[in-house]
Amino acid sequence: MNGDQAFRAKGNRERWPEMTYGGALSFLRRRYSRDLDGVDVVVSGIPYDSAVTYRSGCRLGPRAIREASVQLAELEAFPFGFDPFKTLAVVDYGDCMLNPHDAASVPGTIQDHAAHILASGAKMLSFGGDHFVAYPLIKAHADRHGPVALIQFDAHCDTWEDHGGIDHGTMFARAAAEGVIDVARSTQIGLRTHNNSDHGFEILTAPWVHRNGIDAALEVITARAGDAPVYISFDVDGLDPAFAPGTGTPVTGGLASWQALELIRGLGGLNLVGMDVVEVSPPYDHAEITALAAASVAHDFLCLLAQQKGAKPNPTGRT
Image (cartoon, rainbow, N blue to C red; front, side):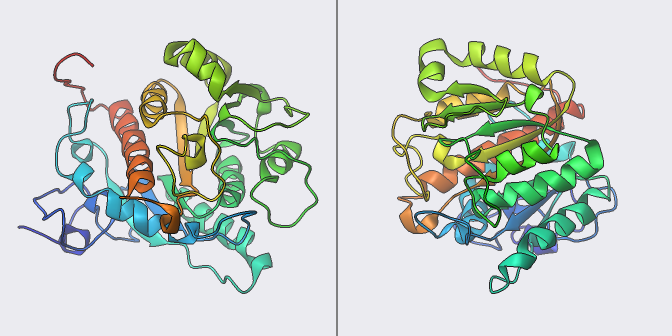
């Protein structure tokens, strides 16, 4: 069989040749399905961006990330050296259906969407949308796993003073106050904006990572998380605008894409329960730079889960 495996595949571990420039688009060409029997990971889009404070457009992020994933679906994963889908059953669930004209309904709709998926026993890989969508996603994960250790890649703390409502810069202060995030186990990475309070998070600023390196950052992150259930929230503005121009609130001096990938690849020893990748705004992107970075980060998260399930790395050359 060749082509269009997104809707022609019969199982969740199949992979066959596709034209990278053609065929039905899903994330990594995974089968579109809402049958979650035996599924390990569900990919789903959360196309909401009405909580932004500057540039909009990230409601189109899930579509862009799927499109940018086509080359990653061609070969065995680098640097892991395996096909993750021989081990991991992954489906693309499609997008969460939202009513953009009824803002008050959005958080509950997202949380219910995630709760339904998590109730199947599958993990979630979610694509925003603006960063607010992480709040109801984390609430659903905490309902299932207890308070989560948050590993947040971001230019911003997103813990500014919470005045209620729907805002992509305050929701982690709310989540911490509600106890759905275990701040004593949580780390924020790549920050380069100021807040007078750290709200109990460990903060590794972008300059700190640049000066101290990947291994030092991983030592802090993993020691702090311990054996807690870990939720990764990856805001693409954690990357420098040179590597992620297509985002709503870009800040110079951020992580390079290689740094982010190395950090993600170093988290495989943790109890990973879920991840979101947010704030990809295609109208501000150039040559898919931002969407490619987002797709690569998400792809490597799946590879970590495949490795945890028993996939054996087979790297080529010095990694």
